[in-house]
Amino acid sequence: MRLTTFLLTSALVSALPYDADPPPSEQVPFEPVASPRPTPPPGSQTYTDIEVVDKPSTPEKRAAMAKLLDKYAPVFKLASTERYYPSSVPFMLEHYEFVQWENGTQFEPNNNVFTASRLNKLPHKGRHQYLSVTQPHNPQPLVDGPESHFLYGPAGMPGGMEFGDDGRGRVHDEVYGFWVDNGRGVVDLWYWTYYPYNLGKEVGYLGWLGNHVSDWERLRVRTVNGTAESADFNTHSGGAFSAGTYRWSDLERFGERPIAYVASGSHGVWPNPGKHVYAQLLNLWQLVDMTDDYGAIWDTQGHVVPIEWWTGPDLAHRIRHTGNHSWLEFEGMFGNAGSSNCWWHSIVGVCQLVGGPIGPNRWFGDPPDCIIGRAAPDHSKYLFYLSLNVTKQARAMNVSTILVEQICARPEVALNGEADWNTLRADQMKVWTVPGRAIPFRGTAQHHATAEPCGGGRSAAKAYRLALYNKDGERVSTSNLRVLCMYEPGKRGWVLSPAVDVEDVDEWRWMLMEKQPEEPPSHTPPSPTSNGRRVGY
Ligand SMILES: *[C@@H]1O[C@H](CO)[C@@H](O)[C@H](O)[C@H]1NC(C)=O
Ligand SMILES: *[C@@H]1O[C@H](CO)[C@@H](O)[C@H](O)[C@H]1NC(C)=O
Ligand SMILES: *[C@@H]1O[C@H](CO)[C@@H](O)[C@H](O)[C@H]1NC(C)=O
Ligand SMILES: *[C@@H]1O[C@H](CO)[C@@H](O)[C@H](O)[C@H]1NC(C)=O
Ligand SMILES: *[C@@H]1O[C@H](CO)[C@@H](O)[C@H](O)[C@H]1NC(C)=O
Image 1: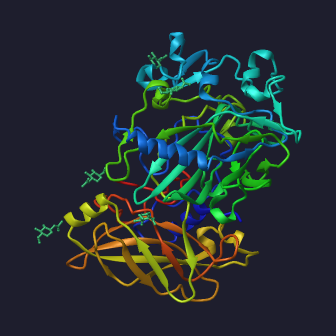
Image 2: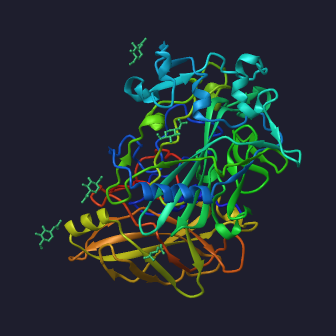
Image 3: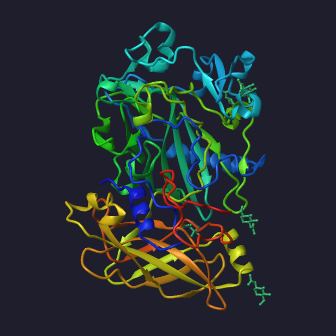
């Protein structure tokens, strides 16, 4: 079942009073493509905003994490119609020829900058620059000269594919496995895949739109004390257009490892084969990701490059990468700049070639798309933690009491099943808050709170947040929302329920001092992120 938390969060947020995030833009964005500029990762920070240190953890810990990454290394099933196969950063670096600034000025750096250990030596670490190839290979009609065959990846080049006994192709390229220690045994494994080229989508007579040189995609696996619990599937900048969070038991697996299906051409990662409609363009064209179980198999076990991301949530400093990992410090774009000279650009916003994406070393500190809890029959139970930083700020503000606020919603329109539920707009549902029982502030120790169920037929608990009160009974801060996903033991997928029993292992992190807007903020379209925006440490 598809869970579209972005629309949901946005709709919930815009139906709530003052202290929520800006309302979403009404229009579904056209996002089959990488943004031509670095998109701020989930959270208002970018990877360049957090402090970088040379403090990797002990060799023992790094070895254990490398083992964990390998234990859950995904098996990617590429589509039978795929032509643009994966490769690696070292492979692609040999093919870049020049660098272009955002203002269009091109330069040819000293050749040895295009190596994994020197890419960060570009001016300003490559920020506002596009690594470029001479043949951007815009297939309109298909430019298919041997000079640009490398854009098909090693397996896509003539004679490059290896085949298994089952007649299906095999690819063996490396994946980049970021491990993110969230404390208390919670470790996220982010598997990033790389492809030299992204084929966009065919949009009627406009042809193939949204092609770009270089494509980064990801699958996130959440582990707790060494055991996988869930996976997040991301496509097209995440959010509503992705499959979202899946419980481990709901996933198709190869032994202990997740199987993921890769969309033909654009390489978004899905939990199952089929047709995935993820957006509608000008109400005219559906944008569709196609996955199937007939193409090449990319088993990444033994091919995961382990990468430590940060020092952990308390210090929250990013680890600086050196040696043959220096390319991770490159802050520019991995492919040519896009064009905007097509006649439909002002209407659709994309031409055939769009700018290449930034690298994979982004922001990984947020919780999964949704917080998993068990559907509860009578009342809700919330177990949660505050981060050290939130605790410190709360002490400084004399916080004495915490209130859990359960966000309830009820559709106000007829629905065909629960899948539709998640795509409701703000004006199609009633949203209200059920305050839980006030509990004393207990620092970083686990907090236990309860709340009454959401009342009325067809209503469901959809999210929760925290409100902090000081000794004078004044509300001093409100967190943002965390969307809930509920299951029933023994049943696949998600269910709706008026109450939930949740043990949230993602400690709460936000900036308490941040000024709360007095009135609803102005209409600025947010980037499609998951819950947990506005993270502060
Ligand atoms: C473009 O930007 C670069 C870097 O800031 C600068 O060196 C160059 O002069 C600029 N070119 C033009 C035409 O403005
Ligand atoms: C992981 O294990 C440790 C030690 O047994 C325990 O204290 C901790 O609560 C566990 N983490 C979670 C999220 O269950
Ligand atoms: C990268 O560096 C590490 C550690 O120095 C080394 O073990 C590894 O083989 C190197 N990889 C490549 C591709 O050079
Ligand atoms: C917290 O309480 C102390 C002592 O009662 C007081 O001096 C301080 O101003 C208070 N801080 C805030 C932010 O209200
Ligand atoms: C908490 O994080 C904020 C934002 O990074 C920082 O300004 C503040 O100093 C931190 N507070 C503590 C007590 O570490």
